[in-house]
Every structure is written in structure tokens, then in C-alpha cells.
Image (cartoon, rainbow, N blue to C red; front, side):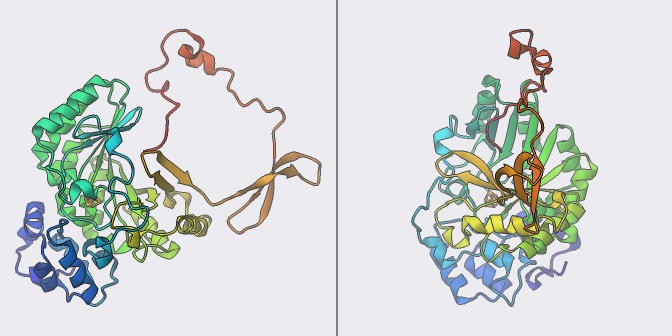
Length: 407
Ligand code: SF4
């Protein structure tokens, strides 16, 4: 990558050092103005944000900023707009209702079998669309060791928790040792089957993904790393190396993209992003409708925009490159996924068969006849899941097939 001129003095060793990247992040309007000529709205946005929200851009991520275009998707993700200081009707400080599901300071427990562990309140780069900005932008006092210990004790006491997402903030701002301590604490809990680590590091500070880190994460398998690419500009050689290091070490990588007005709100941009991610061996998992986080309305799209984008992608790229479109319902209702409407209705075809009419991605109508009989239960189910019939316990993993909601 071509470095921003502000950082050409750094040695290659410094540039490749994730801690150097964190230490040298641009955190003020003056520093950003030295990196790119700021447009007037960006100056006003930064002035309004000063002292109210956190700002940070790593030298690596700053080098992706287009100095000539304020509408650059990287700039729009990290430089506040003046609209960020405004409140739109419907904006919420806690957009997805986490506070009412927060039994411990560092735990959000919304779905029965899944919990979120907030490992840290800081990030390497502060995204202007952040949902958890009430925490990451500095209104909370952070998560010390006592808060994390309390979180581990909570998970230990709640045997229904099968899946823990270590998030924050960005847990990869922590040292390997600190993160390893948290993961080891979780892995020592017998009922925790699955771990996930949610981080933007492969996007904003790919130097953070060292061989040592990837090997450490692999020791806690099954562990998924969930990252957050939003635009093809972020798919650099460095980001590819980071993702491939994880996958090569046996750490599966999934991606969650946030649909952002004017940043990535087109089928062409998102199709390009998702196809590039697959070449990194990263699976596009969710496309998120923007949450109602206060100060982010200018970045949100109408609900139909995401559905229309999925409709345009379907049939034009492989299914692997099409994520679920998710809306995290305001007030803590949980996630729902949206689809274009393919099912047109019930009816009969020219042979007199009962069934359903559907449309394909080209808008052509097709008929799918119902099979004879409507009973869709599996006769062997009661034998296999013996607890359903009042017998012995079900198989430990297979028995948990009726999950609530999505995460
Ligand atoms: S990295 Fe994640 S938690 Fe941090 S500011 Fe960005 S979206 Fe928010």
C-alpha cells in the first residue's frame, strides 16, 4: 500500500508493528488535517465531536483515505459529519436494547444460549456508525479485570450459555496475554461450546494478526473470528494476509458488513466486497441494516434498500457471496432477517396440482407442487431425541437444535 505522506518516516519494522499503529493513531482534528485536506463539513463535524466522542484512525487505515474526495468511504467511516451531533426522530442511545439485558457490567445476555462479553471499551479506530457508541465513545468507565472476572463468573453460573461472543469495543486492542486469559477462562467452562471474537483489526490494523495471535486463537477452537469489512477499498494485500493467517492457522473468519448510506449502499459495491472477501477465504455472514444509534441517521438507508440490494445480488453472484440481511430490532427484540419476496402465493397449476407460485431473480414465475400429505415431522425424531419422549438425555450437541433468534 502507499503510505500517507505523514508516515513515510516510519521504518518498515515500525509500520508492521500493531502497537506502533495503535500508538500513532490520529486522534485530533489537527492530526487528521495533516493527513488529508479536510472539507468544510469534515472540519465542522470534528469541531462538534471534540470532547464529546472518541476519534482514532491508525496510520494504516489513514493511508486508505482518498485525499481528494471527502466522499471517500474510508473518510466517511472515521471523520465525523456535522449531522452526527444531531438527533433524528427515533434515534436511541441504546439502539438494540442491550442495557435491559445486562445482568453484569461486562455481559449482555439477550438470547437464552448466547452471551456477549464486553472485554474492553476501546477500539483502534472509532467508526462513526458504531452501535455501541454509548460505550466506545467514552461515556462509560471501561471494563477492568474485576468486571471481566464478574462476567466469567456469570457465564459459569449460567449453564444454558453455549456460545460466547467476546466483543467490546475491540478485544484485539488488548495484549495477547490479556486476551488469552479471557479465552482460557471461558474455555474452562464446560457448557461453553463455541467462542467468537468480534474485531475490526483485520480491516483497521491488520498488523495485529500476528502468527502468535492466530496460533493462540486456534488453541481455543471451536473459535470463530468475526470481522467487519464495509467496502472493497478495505480489501488490501495487508488485510488479505491477516485473514489468510487466521484461516491457515485454523481460525474460521466471518464478516459482518453494516449497510451505510453513501458508503456502500449499492449492489455493485457490496457484490464486489463480498466476492473479494471470499477470495480472502472470509465468508460474508451478515449485512446489517443500520441500528438506530443516536447520531447515525445520516448513514442509515431505508429498510427497502437492503432488500433491493439482495434482490440484485441473487442470481448474479454465488450464494456464498450473499450474506443474511439482518435488522436488530430496536428495544432488544433481537435480530430478524429480511429477504426479497420470492413466494408469490398458493394456487394450482395447469395440471390441477396444488402448490405455490414463486418468482426467480429474473422475475419469472415458477410453480412448486406440494408433496402428497402435509405431515412434515420426522418419525425417528422421538427416538433420537429421547428426552422429547420422556426418556434419557438427548445427545449433548445435537439436542440443541431449537434455537431462539439469531446472533
Ligand atoms: S470497531 Fe466496532 S466497536 Fe469499535 S467503533 Fe468500530 S464498530 Fe464500534
